[in-house]
Image (cartoon, rainbow, N blue to C red; front, side, top):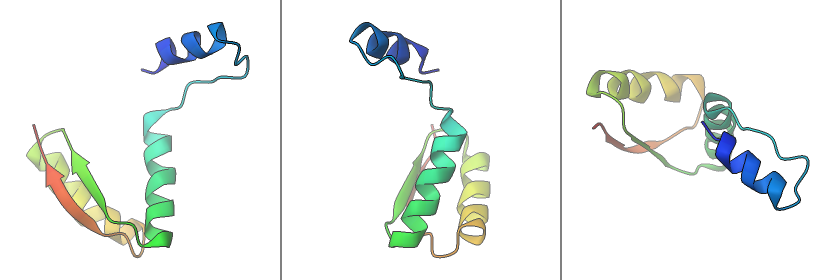
Length: 72
């Protein structure tokens, strides 16, 4: 969940370290990739979820190119 990384960063002196919520990070990265024409790949989850994301994300983020998708 990212908290061990936050604890470690704080022990190393980065007092403002905060947890990054995964879905929020993904949203921000997809926005940037769509704007800069950077292709993305999806890894993990079920095939059903990957199929949904491959179809939905390019509609939500205009210009997004998904060039790879693999489910576990």
